[in-house]
Amino acid sequence: MTAHRSFLKLIATVTAVAALAIAGCSSSGTPVAPVPEPSPTLHPTATPHPSSTPSPTATPSPTPTSAVAACAANSSACDAPYMPGPDVSPYPLQSSKHLYVAVYTFGDTYANGGFLVFNEPLTASSTPLLVSNARTGPYFGLAVDAEGQLFATPSQSQNIDVYSAPLTASSAPLFTLPALIETVLTFDASNDLVAEGEFAGGCFRIFPPPFTSTSGPAHFYAGTARALAISGHRFFVGQTPYEIVVDPPYTSTTSNVVLLGVDPDEGIWAQVVDSAGNLIVASKSLLVYPQSSIVGYSASPTVTATLPAPPTGSIQGLVSMGYDAQGHLIMTSVSCIATNGTFSCQSSLFVYDMPLTNSSVPIMTMHFPGEQLGQIVAGP
Image 1 (cartoon, rainbow, N blue to C red):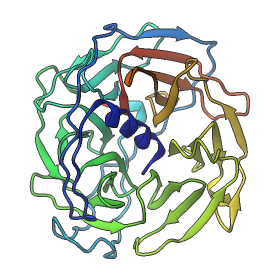
Image 2: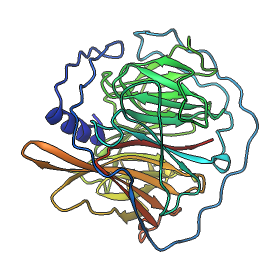
Image 3: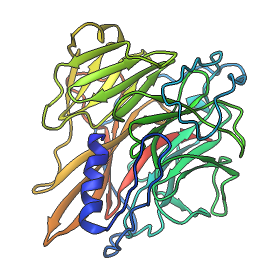
């Protein structure tokens, strides 16, 4: 299980009673029932840091085309070969006007979970708009497809909700896709939706476009589900201290590489690929590995940057990494302090200039008392 979700599950174990039935990729689970916590402050506090020059934005690309059809829904052939369709243009960052943050909560300020929506560019004085949604319960996974639609995974539902963006207070899902209890969502170069299933026996589900209410996933099984990052069609599956590389048709491991620099106790919290194809890994430090180095037996980082320390006496887990419309790297983290068996938590949002260097520090930090944030994505 991914380190950051092991962290969240530890909290859930103390604050909730859960029953899960797991039997591989075709299994189903009973969601965790959250226990409310006292309501904290309604708005985040923001701390400005010295500014630096934003990274250049990307150039728009042509309209995407659909990829090949997938295998039928609920297929048990988790190791069936899958070849992606032709590459398409991702939704361009510079066209993004909002930053969407999933709210993964056990009952506090945003009692039903949902989304925080920020106007771009993000500043130290930015305040989020909580967007209501038709589905009750918290969200964890978020991704935007090449058409600008928002895909979200309710943490207590076996569905992936698909929204038209931009979101409004009255937005409701256009339709849902069948899922197990998926968490992290990512798109590959063919606009295939890849859903990493935490409780699905290590199953990754691939949904090819076009997306409709009758879309079915194509499965592949790539060992125990861990932190996932995608570069083109190459999957990086973080399993401390190894990085498993999987290429199409996703039936076997391409390579299994030890990532030097990953803290054996902290593990791999989250990872993402930058615009140059480098793999950025969050462990006890922020590590950068050129993709060309992730071969053979081991790989050494070319950049090791310090991560902000958690509050004194707390345990911390980095949850997600993504980019805003200016190309900044944004990370969400959760830190919790246990008092008499009850966890008191807050989330933080760290903004970094790109490219990362050994001396990189956040140019801005925002704190969300009482909240637990999930994935973050820029979109319409």
